[in-house]
Length: 320
Image 1 (cartoon, rainbow, N blue to C red):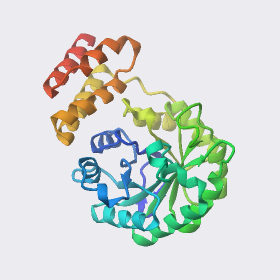
Image 2 (image 1 turned 90 degrees about the horizontal axis):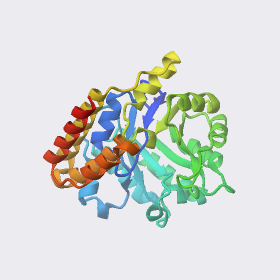
Image 3 (image 1 turned 90 degrees about the vertical axis):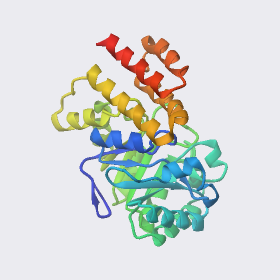
């Protein structure tokens, strides 16, 4: 799949997820085979750019691969300025968020709320595309609510405005993350526009990945929650798509190495106090089975990086 001048090495992309797809997680997914990892969403409001959270998300030093930075907002001028600012900071691709269903985002008429106003969508897309000389991509949902799935209309607007690639989550905003993703709208979008289309939503196994590719005819897949605690899913999917066979499950020693590396990167990125707290949710995803409940409870009570590191080592020592 081609995004502007960038040829992706395969059909797998890491979805942007606030509080999840920081640099540590993105680099880990890239090493396990993802062709592109989109950054966490950045507000277009310059008043918040000096916050610790925004500064962390804007940091690209040590970034691996193609740098795709997602921005969110509802004002065309602010979005254009945010795009220019992030290109100056090192973004290779600007991605526009019109898919986030979070209430705090939608109450500002940003994210998926924008799908209620195709005219404003057009203004924003035109402003951002005109503001930068890098490729601009877009992420949407299938619509605002099941009764008003206007994904095809928004996709046509996007193509007309110069968007070079479109990712579609197979739910409406009203659906949030409940129920199951539907792929009929994504298939219809792919059949309507000529730009690359990326399918997103509920892709959590190699078999599901192949089904979605075959059913929709899309150019690539975007994987979000399916990679939480399982960055090696990209390797598993690639192997299945290439061979038709399932890759052997990850060994305990490899999982230990991945988890400890991930924790260390979190401590480096956020500092020990915040890193310890970010580590809790990631370890909760890595070890999310019922029989691991006590370990998670013990881990979540720890207050230092050394304690967390030691408990993970002890867990895998006993497992091996």
